Image (cartoon, rainbow, N blue to C red; front, top):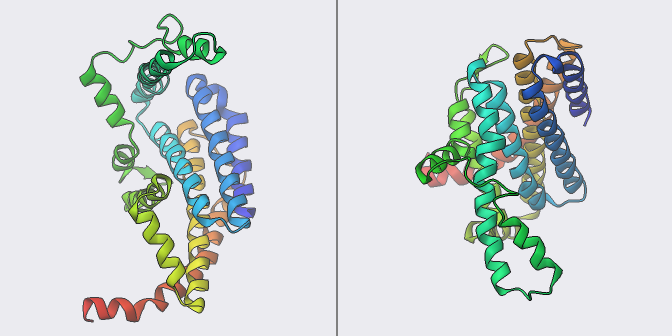
Length: 276
């Protein structure tokens, strides 16, 4: 929480000092950062009350928001206007088309005098919600694929942030996938529940502690990356760069021994599997 407070203050300072430099991007990035912060608060609240699986589900949204922030901030300057148009207009139009089709199904089966029918009828009106900005089907599919989480993460791999390449960034796809299993309530999600229920008590405590440490570490790391990407976008200066970096490193140091303890507890199991 201390680390998040330091990073939050740096983000607020960057917007207050440099936000007017790129007004079009700022009007998109500011609400994205606010959404990122609110998702992080929700995750922390759920962890505090012991709802780790629910925290993972919300974390999926946190990952999505962070990826979009990084995607915009780390893009080449000439590409940013294109991305902002796609984010608001093209993807918005695609969403309008999809909502209109679903709303039409509701309208067909609704009681004509029911007030909700008017609400859904409005969603089908192109005069209110533009559905044609995205162009033909192939173009819509291309834009949606470009903005999918996996494509964004893949495109970010190796990009420079704080002078270092984001090598290994695609590893986040695994954790995002696990969050998705939980959100979709599929077989893998039920396997996770069963695994947790079958663990010996001592091992379970290590696993649960490691789980929480990983979620917290992910939150701080990604928020820190987003703040640094925002600084690069503005080509600005931080309030206290040393304190900012220490916030990131302190969280990593606190998390590492907890996660290492659980990994060590599993060593014998994996040695049997791999015959080492």
